[in-house]
Amino acid sequence: MYQERNVATVIILSIVTCGIYMFYWLYVTMKDINSYLEIQDMDPAVELLICIFCSPYILYWMYKYSQRITDVHIKAALETASDDAVICLILAVFGLGIISVAIMQNSLNKAWTTGQSVGY
Image (cartoon, rainbow, N blue to C red; front, side, top):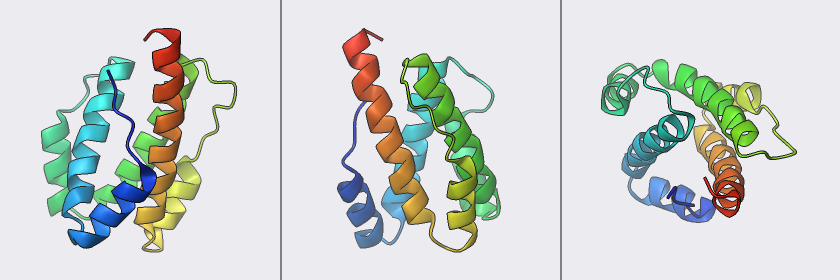
């Protein structure tokens, strides 16, 4: 149900498309996480527009969704549910948001693999 994405592909496509693919990744990641956790706090399309037009919001987004990935890990019954929110935020502050994206996608891939084998 939830799609695993190759971390290297996400990074390469984000670089090759000058960041356009990263915005697509943000959108589908928001939809997947919110759907999995059954959260309906803000429409992903609206939140994506805020990320695009209010660039400091992306820092908050990195922190917020890194924390939600921890919640995904807990729901997927992963034994190692580490909270990478602070490291993702720090990387994004220093212009290394692409590394934060890689960390987040890798964590999601672990959860999606476990969640599908458990039957979510």
